[in-house]
Image 1 (tube, helix red, strand yellow):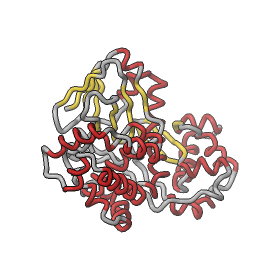
Image 2 (cartoon, one colour; image 1 turned 120 degrees about the vertical axis):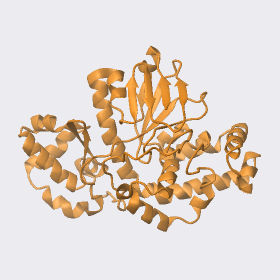
Image 3 (cartoon, rainbow, N blue to C red; image 1 turned 30 degrees about the vertical axis):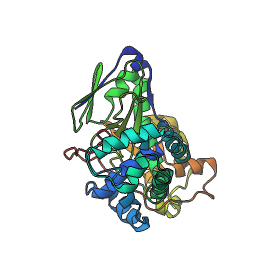
Image 4 (cartoon, one colour; image 1 turned 60 degrees about the horizontal axis):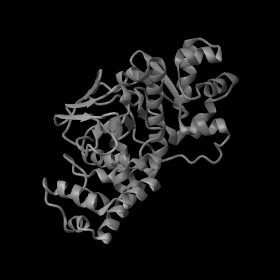
Length: 350
């Protein structure tokens, strides 16, 4: 079990990442590519991604094993600013840190020669790593980025509503069921027994599409505290964004346009009904049509239902649908699995 210990100052400094983290999604997706869990969610993504790869998984697998530790430097905090910022921060990792973290990795397994060279400061070996990560991201993450963003934004809407309604206490209580807020300690299912003391530094919560079953945190307790947790995927049918142009024919009439415009940064069905001036049943029906068109995501959180716009829906409201490019078929979300946690950790995680 993981136990994260908060002080009053830590609660005041609790933050929620504004966007998915490009490098966390890249690294955690390597776990999803190799395991056999969640076929209904990741099955199509696995087959499509494997068809685009060209040996990157073989190179990265020793650095990101299916279970156990992987180096903290692979997921710098700048990844939340986008891939370019994350990769730049990764390239600037001090050599001493690379040596130390790869040394920890080598205690559990024999590393290939090029990784051992990287640990000793070989710049060509480090360039090999960054090239493989970049190529893997382009094959496995970039084609689905809009969909990943939409899922993260839907999760953020639920967390943000909890924060507005009840403060940090309610936000921490709203996290997925493998995480339990028992003030002043956040407990989480975890492959090993570990305590993390924030000591006034606060905590950055990072919802992740590819994180499953257990949260993930840095192994090094001196790094800025980050907790990556599984974003709660919507429990209804997946948005078929690849067929959205054909489905847009359903969006005829003033009411549905008003529904789309009223969802804004996220709202419940009852709030949507009040904003548009229709019954809750009518609001739910119109939101369902918009969801089928790939314009809205619906996330169920207990008895409440939260609707948020997808990037396509937001683009349509901005009048940008003529230039919007639809991604390949995204990983299909469903109710999160409840299988036994695997021992997959950055220090642990995955």
